[in-house]
Length: 498
Image (tube, rainbow, N blue to C red; front, side):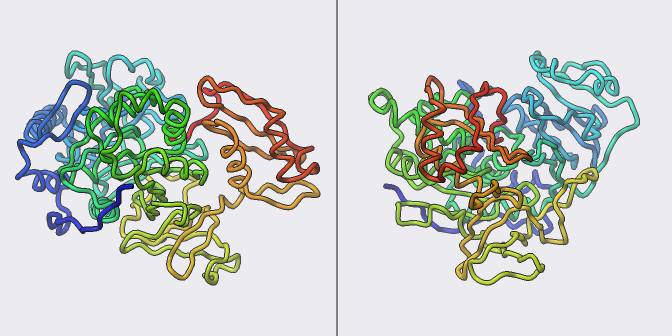
């Protein structure tokens, strides 16, 4: 099994950060002829990339884009074009935000961000809300498939202090726009590079959308600053192509969220004999999984199948985004933990009295980090409390004397059924994931005590409700079981993690 090395990379001095684009550009001066980005049959060197960025910057300048303007880039997943326009906006001192309107759970439109203008591909224009579109001028062609819409109304927002805007993870299904400053952003990028030992010669596969701060900052920007090659999977993610792309491009790392990670494990556990004859994944140095709780059972399977470390990460968009890292190389490692804080980050737990709890006791987690966001673009009633560099989360967990962090769930994540011992939702979820081929499930407790569990099986897998109930009954008893109801909705009706 491979191991990760911990040689802190030599990075350009950022000083006062200046223009974020220039920090990247300076790093790439000695790499201009190296391959920077790959997408399908297209390859770009760093020189190609910065040539395109300059051209895009000129185009935006002609459109009147200035420092502090918010520019929305609408794309279905991840692409070379998206990051070229992103960096062009940053280079002008504007604050770009990437939106994926093809995702029916993505509630934000360009007008919701007060965007001065937005760039959208013709094939997904239909997802722009007509009511929002009324505030923008008719489409102005940028290329054969990209169009520009410019604000004509007065509802424009400006943010001169933000270098980048991101959306929250949307766990409450109420999207928030978060402001990142250049200094905090660079701190998080450099911390990611150091914690994961990201190297210039690495190749990473993007399967996460750029709309997600974990994918945009934790993966893309962290590798791009180091001069690594970034490979985009495709604009419309098909999970079963991941193995083929790892083999074809000799990929060193893949960043995932639980549903993608589970599918990667499922495919090779069930069809190993088919994949092994055609593909190799021996180039992998590690696979990361973050964004939500991941069960230990699939991590153990992945260690055996992929034979590389599995890296659990913990973070949230408001923290810039990544906070902690747990590099798992064997079953002897603390698989249930989310890891240790990044260098320069402090995490502790507060009891109900508002004081730090003793070693290992449960409390509400607080994060103090130099990468704390600058707050929200617009006021949100359900935003986290941010006080300077401290973020008061909704996660209940523990931190031991060595700094190892464990998360038990949200404050409302305990299942309290009449006459039964309380258990954490994650505990029940782990039981189901460990025993059945499940892509995603949703657990919801009703006021009258009934517990509804919605299960989305892996593709072409049948799960019998009575077998799930039998497992739950054997673990938690008949009293608990009597209040459980199992349903199998269409997968499109269950919101996947990110």
